[in-house]
Image (tube, rainbow, N blue to C red; front, side, top):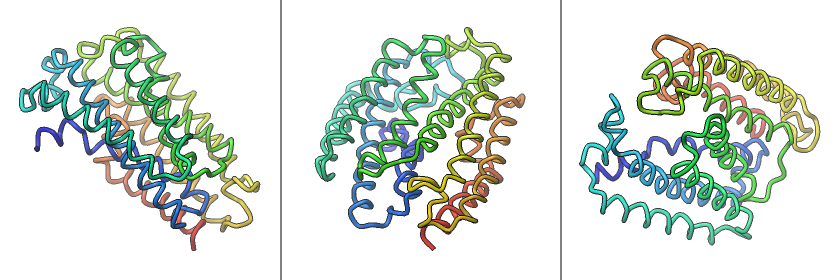
Length: 290
């Protein structure tokens, strides 16, 4: 069971917290129906994502065994057999794709899940080594999670929010690739040989610039879908710009450091980034619910 839990990458379920952002920013998260829809969407996405993680590890088992850290993964180390992994992947996929029937009018969310599955399978079996395209596919997974939270409860979202999510996802993926290139090189991820440090630095700067600009515009947007909507407390919501900008600077610094710290490592291990995330959450809650 420990091996299965490891293969499911339960720690990665934190990414599915993006499903909460849209209903949370709209001030509707604790509405009974929205809360149930969001919880169902979170569990469904988590199960489907874990199914894809297992398939990915099965596909990469030989290369993972040559990696300094990935060789400890459940399938690569032999702790979880291929048969058990395939069975678990199938079961998780079926359960994850069945759960959304509990959502009111689930068609839109099903579309999000299907797009995620198709894109992920394309990445695993075909496009993993397609330079730049693979960045877009991985970033799309973050975008689909964020937009899925709005779709699950039929919540209209700001155009600025969608831009923030899109380029924020790209920023995180490029940051991860930059960290990998500096830390382990291209031995385990061949596509990294197609990138240079200078290119990834430029892509990181480009995406960060768009994220900061779009977030600022979302924060001062006074329309019904903007953070400064008349139904919200404007001051704490506009102050969220501060932790967002500081967190982005920390991620850039980490990605370009000799240690090659990925955004995920910073979020899970760096106390300063964690505090900035908590401040952002506190300001968001204070501006939309207090």
